[in-house]
Amino acid sequence: MTTPTTFTYTPSTLPLYLTICITLLGSAAGSFLTCLTSRRQSGESILKGRSHCENCHHLLHFPDLIPVISYLTHKGRCRYCHAPIPPTCLIAELAGAILYAATFLRFGLSCNTLMWLIAGTLFLALSLIDAAERIIPDSLLLSLTFNRLLFLTLFHASLRHEIISILTGTLIIPVAMLILTLIMDKATGKETMGGGDIKLIFVFGLYMDWKKMFFMIFISCVLGLAWIAARKILHRDQETSDSTIAFGPFLCIGCLAAVWFGDPLINWYINLF
Image (cartoon, rainbow, N blue to C red; front, side, top):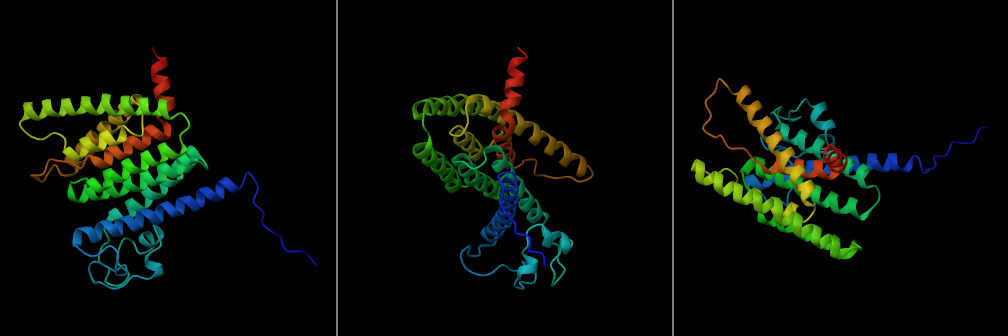
C-alpha cells in the first residue's frame, strides 16, 4: 500500500504559486473595475445589485464571471441573448493580470508591491474612465496622492532623501510639461493636453524621480502617437470629427513601464555618454 503524496511548498515553488494567485487576483480586479465603470456611465449604483447583461439584463452567474475565460469561452457574447460584450472587458481583465503579475515579479514580497498594486488598480480605473468619458476624476488623483504619502510616511527609512527626490520629480518635469502645453495651446488655438493629464503628471512626480518621469513622458508620447496613427489607418475611409484621444491610459502605461524596467534602460542610455 502506497502512501498518498503530499504537496509541500518549497522556497523555489512558493513564488510561482504566489505569482499565479496574484495574476488571478489582478484579472478579477480588472473585471470588477470594468463593472464599476459601466455602472458609473449608466448611472446605476455601484454598491447595490448583482452583475447583469447590459442588453437583456439577465443576471450573470459564476460561469459568466470567470475573468478572461468566460469572455473567450462565449466568444465575446452574452450567454443568454448573444449580444456582443465590449472588448474593453477582456482588455481590462488581461491588463489587470499583467499589472499585478509584473508588479509582484518586480518587487517581490515587500511594501513596494502593496503600494504599487494599489496604485496600479487606481491606474486601471482611471484609464477605463478616461477612455470612456475623457475625464480623470479628482477623487482618483487624491487617492493616488494619499496612497503614496501613506506608504512614504509609514515605511520609508530615508524620508529626507525621498522628499528631495519627490520635490525634484514633482516640479521639474510636470512644470516643464505645463509650460509647454500652455505654449502649444496658445500657438494652435486649441487644447493640446487636458487639465486632468497635467494633474496626473504632477501626482506621478510623487512616485518617481525626474529621470523616470522623463522616461514615462517619452513612452507615453510614443504610444499615444502610435495609437493616433493606427486609428487613422483603420478609419482612413471614414470622416471622424473627434480627433482627441484619452491620454491618461498612455501616461499610466508609461509610469508602470518606468517603474518596472526603467532603471536598466536609463542607466544604459546615460552610459552612452
